[in-house]
Length: 94
Image (cartoon, rainbow, N blue to C red; front, side, top):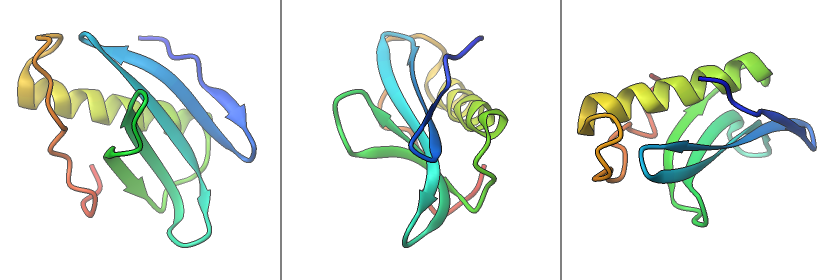
């Protein structure tokens, strides 16, 4: 799947859909946790996925989105429309 990843203020961001849900991914350096990729459901700031200490590159952003979607597919079934909060633990790298 192709994603429209944009460079934004020292990091990368991407709006994407999976099933019937829309998500926002953000990858950048943070002042307190180093580099991190976070994925949110569109319109909320409750993170569903977080991966830290990774390079801030477009390729890494695409990799984070792919890992998030793979975990969602494994947990709930692709595009079922019944997606719930992803079970990817914030403290474990995928």
